Each structure stands twice: as structure tokens, then as C-alpha cells.
Image (cartoon, rainbow, N blue to C red; front, top):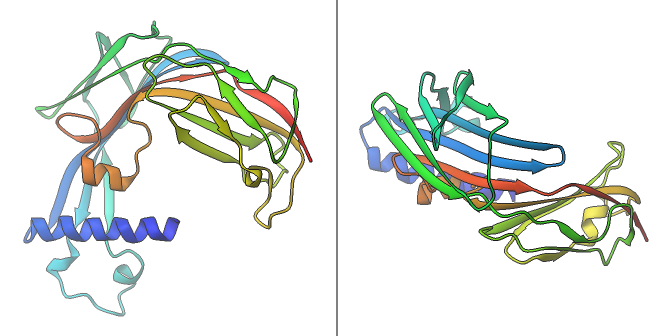
Length: 256
């Protein structure tokens, strides 16, 4: 799957570079932003990353077959963090913690409220909006339950304004070699596949596993292809902006 994504990414870049033709470099802003309410531990935060992506157009030169640059990295991409931008979520200004990273904690986030993003950088204006989903919780299993490795069903209450949910399962013990699992869906239930509790060779790994669940509105962790093909969900730049609510993480014992 990773190799396939790499090939698709290369194809997209080839198309983009053919469009810019004689341009030596192709530059554009890329932004990832989120407001999040976490229940365990309880926190309200806003985070934003902004950088200028630079793609070098190697088609302006005749490639040398012996040049490892063309063999291993045919589409060099660099990202330059953007400093000194004005970043606001509604009326709250996010402080720049390090170059290109803007963050604010202890926000007064409210369920079902709209949060508008505003960015001004070098006379460029970028905007976006999303709604913080309503509170929700995992109904079953319960914390401490013992569940089967081939019939684990996770059910949760509906979160109003949530467009999608992300459910994840990971071993608690760092020595446990199970692969874990996560999925993005619109339903309020999911069946955890048996492979989540197996190592890469298919052997079952019993023990404690954590179940995490997130409800989100807006965009969330779109891949490179999504950004190139759709541009994300921001106006004025490529990027994604979403609002997320994380439920309390529970731990279950998984047995045969």
C-alpha cells in the first residue's frame, strides 16, 4: 500500500510539474490546523502548522542515470516553516511556539459551536471553518472487560455535528507485537478485525488493548493525494482544518 501511494504521488507531481513547464520551482502554502477537546486527560487546544512547500522541477535538466538524486528522490520536496503569521481561531490569537507551529491551550471550547480560522501571512489571507462535535462516549465494551479476539464489537453514542469517527485499537504493553488497527467511518459501531490482535506473522497476541475513539468535523489527516487533487478544505491555500472530540480511552483484556 505504501509503495502504491508513492507511485500515485509521483504521478500527481509529474502532472503538476508539466503544468508549470518552464518554472524552476513550484511553491505553495500547506496548512494543517485543528481544534480539539480531549476528555481524558481533559484539555482544550488549538494547533496549526504552516509551511511553504517547494517542489523542484527536475524536468528542466536531462537526468543522469547514474545520479542517485534521480534514482532515489525523483521529485525533491522541501518545506520551509512560515514564521510571523497572524493566526486566529474566532477571536483567539494563537501564539507561535516555534517557527511554523502555532498553538494555544486551555481554550474555552464549546460543543456544537462554529470555530472560524483566519490566517494572514505575507499579504496572503487563508480562512476555514468547522464545528466542534457534541459529547459522546463508548457504550460497549466497558473498561476492564474481557473480549474475544475474533468478535470484538465497539459501539458508541452518536455525536451531533460529527461527520466521521476514527476508532483505534493498540496493545498497551510496548513489548506486545500486535499490529493494532484503526478505521475511519460514519457509523456508530465497528467490528475490530482479528488481525488487530496479531503480529506481522499472524500469531495471536493476548493481553491488554486500549480502544480510542474520536469524532470530528471538517478535514482530518488527508493524505498528499487529497491535498493535490482537492486542495483540502481551506480557502486561500492547500490544507486541512478540523474540529475533534476525543472520548475517554478504555482498556480491555483480549483472549481467545
